Length: 506
Image (cartoon, rainbow, N blue to C red; front, top):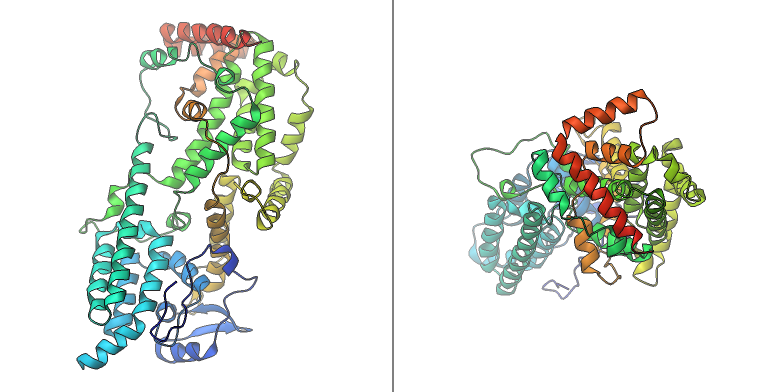
């Protein structure tokens, strides 16, 4: 923990969820009055900060010798400020107000002032770099950090060393983020959709699955649910909080500046949503492959059990993806297959994901998981992985339902406080360490095994259980021609091989 020259302890960097109270930030009144007079004012209601001019909010972020902003305010403002100005512009303002604005021209006085405020500047920049590291891919941000290091060296050698350590940690984190994004661009590591390839080439790739199916790799639903949880939490850990509001930003980056954002291989949030889609298609592919309905029924029952285990763990995103895959038309139309299983467990799961009343049942289950996490004694009890598409939708509607600026030009801080509370809760979930043992064979299978396209799924479904009417017969005929004879024959070979593969296990 950093200390000021007087020996007073500074706030530590800890998970944000515990710093947010039910009502907006409340703090000492003296700094507010000073800011209101000099920068246009901050507006309070019942001692709660509700709005303010952008300049006043920036001033409120800047520490002084006698003042350090509340951590929840720092997070809220850094998260929301990008809707109004670039992080680089904010960094420039903060650096100026911290150091240059109060220079008096006397080297001794200036040196003493920098020495007194330096620990608080380091702490603020630590908060920023640890929570929003993506901001510092912009080379202008990195340049500002290095310039601040030189300025602090003017007054305090200890703070200069602290800044150097801060930059080293930041560079390590950016390197790790870059390596992860590299894996998203590789065929074996990416959960994103890869460019379509000619049907014949895709058919050859599918032949590699001849001796593999999910049940030969992992036949325990609890273990598979654990491995899915590993994948979910790995991907969640790389999503920056700023990505939740980045889509709302109307400011476009200047083309005259080279920045680290241009080096990103993909959007981590979008890649995570693509993982959901991949898992849904993987489930549908595994169910549609076997020819014999008893083998299809075994796979179907297996994934129902996996979804139930995901629910018990608190992995709602994987549970939703699995149920989505089972509700896809190529699977839902397999009436003979569904007739071979007891659907009671599936109906219970469907009840949990019922979209009526704004997903009321799911939200009730999520509240239970959140409560369990808040009082957890073990790492497993802390796991909460929300249905991510709905989580993003909630944030989107929160942004759309309230104005970012009020009629008087003030920033609507109440709105951004609510947004920050939701995102900070996500950060707390993201920092949980997955306690389950990794099964690398299963993980590799889930991430990289080939899956059917929508057309291939539909054709495999028709070959498993034939068309029931003329429309379906015409559709199957059309699919056979569109996928080309070579692809169709390959689908038949895969279905037969998969049937042998699963049948040999029982």
